[in-house]
Image 1 (cartoon, helix red, strand yellow):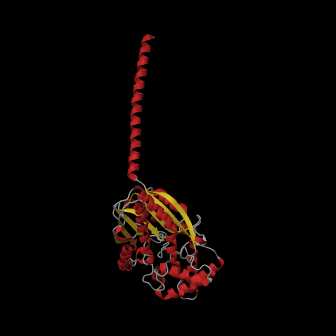
Image 2 (tube, helix red, strand yellow; image 1 turned 90 degrees about the horizontal axis):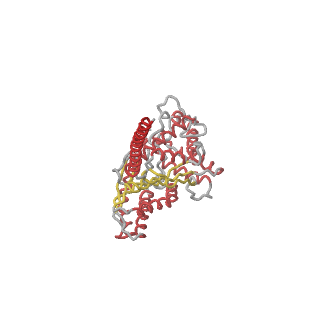
Image 3 (cartoon, helix red, strand yellow; image 1 turned 120 degrees about the vertical axis):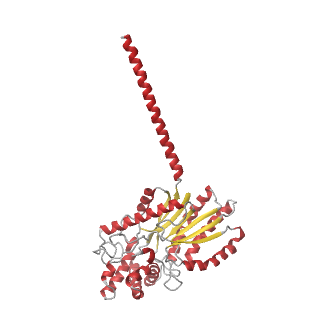
Length: 411
């Protein structure tokens, strides 16, 4: 599967679009908002640059996109006013894969700029918005150009299906499944974990070159509550989608080998996996790392009929994964597939209180030059000490020899 080409949220503003079905993602952003504000306050407490570089990675399209960067700018402006300082110039970079609906974002910019002028007036810093298409698992921006990086509901997507699980593999290792499940062999779990570690390490390495020393990142992604990758909170929404497809297989509507050969480029890590990758990279320091739960439908009308909740969940999932499923199974089965999925989800939620687990981490870019200087000073001090020790040892030996010579003459 060509993830870079195929993965994108449903475009437009129709019934199945991401713009109409991204309330869960909006709720996740809202929950992480205090940590974002805390990170921005810390940045501004050290220094207020004349021009602030801000990137939203995995921005998608729809109402959440410009809402996020607006909130970040307003937080910075508010803190500057509180400190009696002028608002800086804003350089805002919106990143997603090449197939993202950037046109939808760009046509919304005039209204976005006008809203800022109306709400904040002339005292607000100049604002420049740029599209930055490409994979965030590689370089996207010039060196030391960013002060703050935000990413929400994106880093659980992998750069590729883990090697060995692809459709050209000789044997289906994860038969009848789309993702990790209770029946998945250990090699499948290990392949997913390794792919996530490699991808997240690449992400950190790229950002370490782009974020200034002392800069911050706040990253939110789907995760899990324990080290067990087969828990329902991390994978059961995929299990139900696989069940919907297998019901179509049993009716001859979908070929079984098509299900066997599809593996989602997705991984929900535990907190320890995140910490290990961050520590191994060494460029960033963890300021805060927390987990929170959210209802599958974002908590919208939680007391409603379970089937209604199932429909909401199915629309949310469809808006996110349809592009990949359509490429594998064809557009003609999508309506039927997600009707079945809605029923399965509704039935499951009627008897289960399973929620999504999200991880949110606030990172600080280390001053690697200062660390290098410190290491050099320590190394230099050790070298000088070693030289002094050798000189002292040589002097001591000369004195001992002189004593022996004197004593030999006496005796």
